[in-house]
Length: 156
Image 1 (cartoon, helix red, strand yellow):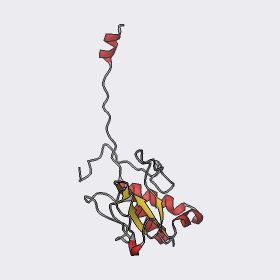
Image 2 (cartoon, one colour; image 1 turned 90 degrees about the horizontal axis):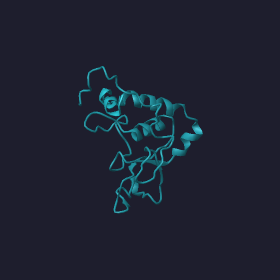
Image 3 (cartoon, rainbow, N blue to C red; image 1 turned 30 degrees about the vertical axis):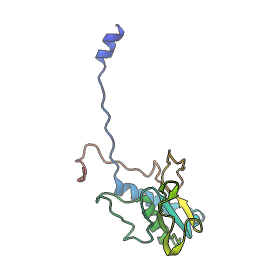
Image 4 (cartoon, rainbow, N blue to C red; image 1 turned 135 degrees about the horizontal axis):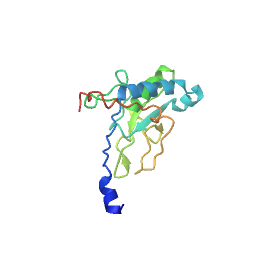
């Protein structure tokens, strides 16, 4: 069999992008964070959590939810809510974004600045900035995907 005829007999497979079930994923994330040792959670005591998912500084939320198009929640806000429920004093969530080398949220709540506050990055790995994922970011074990045979979510 020649190489040309072997190529024509192959069938092309299409890949379907999996859809993340954000509610189930955040429930698993919350359960994992709740199981962490108290000593590890105390790293967040008195600190601001930083992520690229927000554009400002948030110190309180309605049950940890900020609606973005009505479809998902932000992991850092869920972490803040869970940590506070476990008695850890998380100061808030702030943006890690920069413009011209300066943080877009240099001033935090209550007149604090990033220079004087403790800021802990809780987002995923970022290739452009070299930020590494930490124990606080979503892990593969947290992720739950929608059933591809089910009907698509309402926002699609």
